[in-house]
Image 1 (cartoon, rainbow, N blue to C red):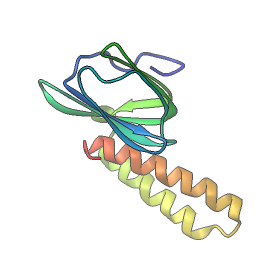
Image 2 (tube, rainbow, N blue to C red):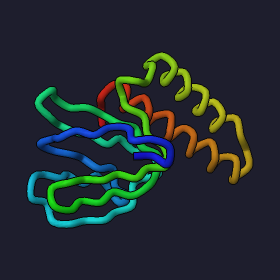
Image 3 (cartoon, rainbow, N blue to C red):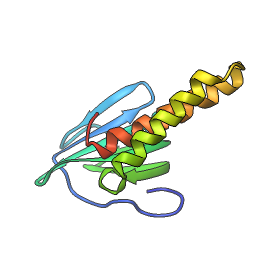
Length: 127
């Protein structure tokens, strides 16, 4: 769920959440949990169709009573991301990072690169 829309509702056998301090694997009967999401990371869901990916940009995840609720600043399902556009975005962000000199600008460029790489990973259904 983003501030604008519900991205996906489904059941799954396993979910991997991109937590702020690393990936969290969630299975049936997991203990209740509330965590910050990584500033950019791929949420993975395994169901009867296989693994599905969602690119997430920050937010929170809650696990409670076999239900996971993710509130993200932005999210995009992997199959909705154009792989060629995602690859181009990675190259553009990398060029910006290499071309900038100021520390503040480098931090912004590094964040843009991390987001572009996350979108590409989700599009390729990778982690």
